[in-house]
Image (cartoon, rainbow, N blue to C red; front, side, top):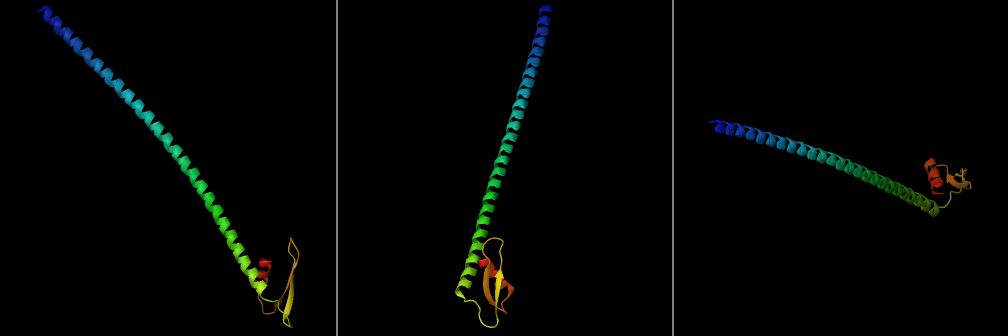
Amino acid sequence: RAPIAASAAERRDADATERAIAASIATEARVVTNEVDEAYEASLRADRAKDADRKAAADAANAAIEAEAARIKAAADAETARAAKRARYAATPEASGPFAKRVRVRLPEGPPLSRAFLETDSVAAVRDFVDAS
């Protein structure tokens, strides 16, 4: 019976050793899996940050393009309005007669402007003349 008992004890020891090895392998596998998951999460966070930076840069570029387009449109609209005022004053003769008054406007830059307006003309007409010039 002694050899049988020894072999049963050896089997128990071998089983315990196998269980310990299996537990060690399972623990190591969990550690490796956790490390891989952490590396993946870190990479994902970095990719998301890069994507957010790219989107912010693209949004800023689009905003700049839209602002420039709005500025160009506003300048074109102003020039169109100025050309319309210029055409209106070029097509109409200066006022004359007893109700005509000459208005001179001195500008900070350029020569002074002068034109005769009727007494009934509004100040807006004078301003349009100045804008057109």
